[in-house]
Image 1 (cartoon, one colour):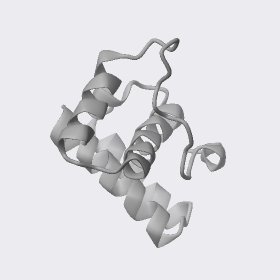
Image 2 (cartoon, helix red, strand yellow):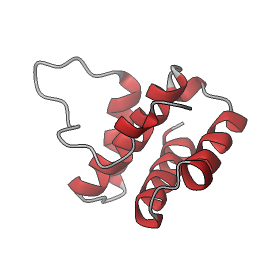
Image 3 (tube, rainbow, N blue to C red):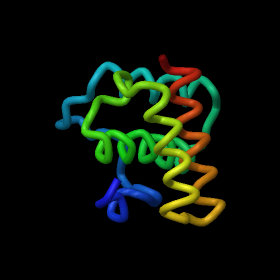
Length: 102
């Protein structure tokens, strides 16, 4: 999972603008986060967590096998050694996506 350093962290400006095409899956995630009452910053971080795993694996997030998600989470915490706070936001963002949006 080399090359993740540029993708791990909080993202900015993940809400699509009027000009950007948005996938149905991303629209669904935004809608689900709005329904859950998540604040904009939390929504931003959760979207970033999902895009980070997609960039690392090269696979759409709804097609990533459960085992690969688990390996990514373990790698993020143990091998990459991200801070606990950053790890938890990524973990909960992925958990929200896989349990609430799919």
